[in-house]
Length: 69
Image 1 (cartoon, helix red, strand yellow):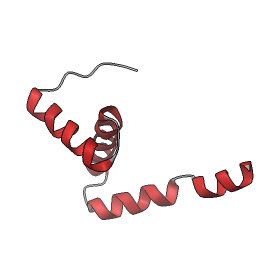
Image 2: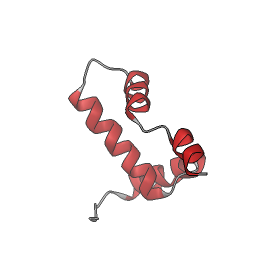
Image 3: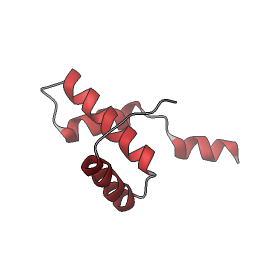
Image 4: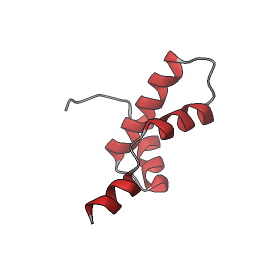
């Protein structure tokens, strides 16, 4: 884990978004960084396309929870 310095205004934006999205401040910042990285790597994809792609690649946590029980 590292430390990233950001300006106060952006930090406040992350704090506000994290409350709305029920994420920690760090999780919200990590989400934004990941989406930004993917957007730069795939400039023709929309935000919705990027999210759909990530959902398809994500492990099915519901299935994992059912098999663990």
